[in-house]
Amino acid sequence: MWYGDKQEARVKIAMALVQKGWKIYGFKNDESDAMIDYFSPADWDGIAEKNGFVLCIDQNNLRYSGYEQKEYICGNAVYKTNDRIKKLEAMMNDAASSENEKASCAVLIEKEKEKVGAIEKYKVVETYPKFSFANPRGTSWHIEKDGQIIAKGKGVFAVNDYDWENKEKTEKQQKAEKVEALINRFEKVIKNTDALQAEVIQVPVTVTKEIEKTVTEVTGSDIKDGFTFIMKVGYTHGKYKGNKYTFSYKGEHYNAFAQLTKNNKPSTSMGKSWSLTVDRLNELLKKGHIVVIEFVEVTEYKEKTVYRKTARKQTVSNVPTIATDIIINEITEEFEVTTQGDNTNVIYHSFKTNEKDTEDKEMTTNSMDSVFSKFDSFEISNDQRISSEDMEFCQEQERTYKAVLNAYVNFKKELDGVSHSSFYGVMSNYDYEKSLLEIRNSFINNICFYFQKNYNVTINGDKVMKGLDFDVTHKDIVDIIFIQLDGFTFNEKAEKEIKDATKEMFKHGDKITLKNGKLVLDGYFAHFDSIWREYRLSEKVEKIFKSLQLFDNGSLTSNEELKSKYCGYDNSKKIDNYERYSPSTLDKVKSIKFFKNGKMEIEFDTHQQARAFATEYCGYKKVAV
Image (tube, rainbow, N blue to C red):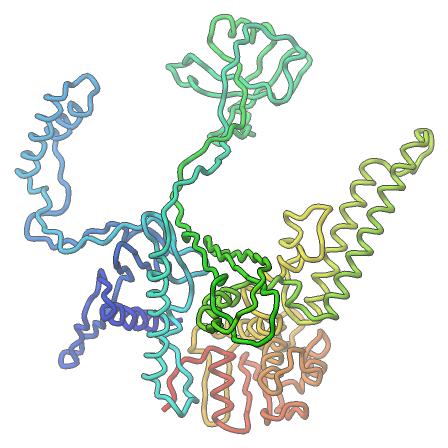
């Protein structure tokens, strides 16, 4: 999105926040003046605060956390130092100086700075609230309180988009509705968080610590991988004190040790290695010049403040029931709804009571609604979001995977019971483990490829495999696949990928020209091969064909007519590719023509269709006249 559109979106949000009682920081009014051709539109830094909650919009770093907006009065803001200031600072920072001497130095330094005009004379106009996090990756806003992120999301810059084909609402109305919806999300976060209760928890953190061992003598067998020592004295003017060395190579008469880097990784530089004999090591150990150390992983606990929704109970055990003349054994039901974080647990209790007279009981809908509304927020498992056909395929793959895995395991057990050391070619442990790994990978890849092929979406199989062990199930794989969908359905994700692929080619809007029903795209679709002395179409033309197919009839597959005509090594260098062609399989497209300068012209039936394709599929931003 263009910077100016983002700026306008932030300003709209800032003005709406003020109306809801938020305090905004870093807002600049529109100072443009057409009379002198001066353009300085309104802008906002994206920081707001309300009731202790800090809203951060479009913040990729912590630059504005506690930021002071200063207004300089006079004086030079550049620090000018002199010899006297340097001497005073050295005395003030000297560990041997007393507290009174340090305080006196600080006063004298300030006076010296005033003499040379180095004091910054300003007043703080505004101090931004402090926040602890930038916007998390993939989000454009977040709200935090007391150093904890309460909520995060997207949609900030979408408030400046509108549907130009919408005849029912104007551009202004559409944008206003989007701004209001976003502000309501912010307000809902604060309202819901009022029920949160701060809780300090202990978070386990694994840290590596070095422990000095009381070793005064070693033998040749002690020098092996993991043997590490640290220098306790400084050789060559104290240069090597504190250096750590670990065993790297065993020679015939000496052992080589590599110096550890700051990350405790052995250095590969020859200049940072040390060759020592066992006798020399023992000599240094006895003198205390070196100490053997060991790296041990320990678990430490750090305090962290989290916010949880307070548990509350809602019962309907005494709610009046609907009057009836039938004598029944009434089933009294109680639902205990406990909300904690993002999870809602409903515990159902039932018990019988004998009631003959139920005329006074009347069931109220409101009380039941308050209980069953909790079911609206229940998450549906991912394996329920796929079709029965998809589920059947996944289950069959899992059954086959487990059967093959068990067969290999049982075969290995039988094989281990037979002495086969003299027989060449029998499965080794390496071959066995490699086969198991390939079986697991095939199971995962089969399911990934199935969804990728059936729904034309991109699935990263390597990321799916990461973290999955041999006890993986098809549900585990489907869960990770849905994470990669980013909240979209398979069809929505496929459509988004097709549109994003063409938008990426024209992200700098100047490559799109729209005139009447003709759309000219400058996407470097053709180039001249200087070696073979011929023009060729690039592979990018297939991305355009996919977008045209989706736009024309909603299909997520490639247009076979255009693909067979233009795509492929032989087809891409045909001379007639630069003649106008009318496809028979597209209803909204009259003709297509490629130019040797890399441009492509698509003629649609109407100007509205051309603009719709340019806007939705190519990122065309110009406003309709």
